[in-house]
Image (tube, rainbow, N blue to C red; front, side, top):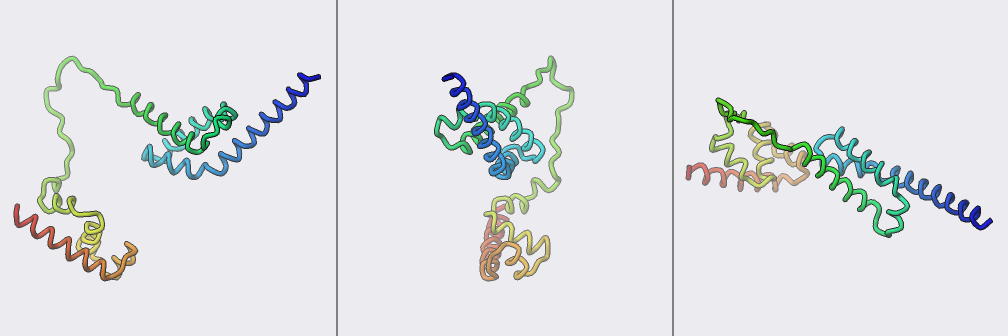
Length: 173
């Protein structure tokens, strides 16, 4: 009789843990997918990563809850570890007996070594965004302010600072 009661209690706990896991997945899935996308850089790989980690965690959900740690943090850490493991497996070197006859040239943009592009890359992000929107996209100050969520005065000051920096860097070169 005691074994039946324990079995019933154990079964109830298992069903409750499964229910908690389903609720956990339902509530945290959007955030986990976003985190996976940030890790992998690809929504499809992110979905695969989340699925494989949730499979592993779901099989030992009761143990995860018993530890008392935050289950979301546990899953995120598992995702990071799994992603690193996958990345390590994929980046293995391919050893060859001899060097190739012709060196492999990377496909650089023809503008890659232009002083103006190098100076633009060195600008702070907001200044670079203002310059690109103003002079490459031909947006007005009001349109830039709206696009970046800043005031027109900030657009003017950022453009002024960026132009001064570009002038000094290009004069040196």
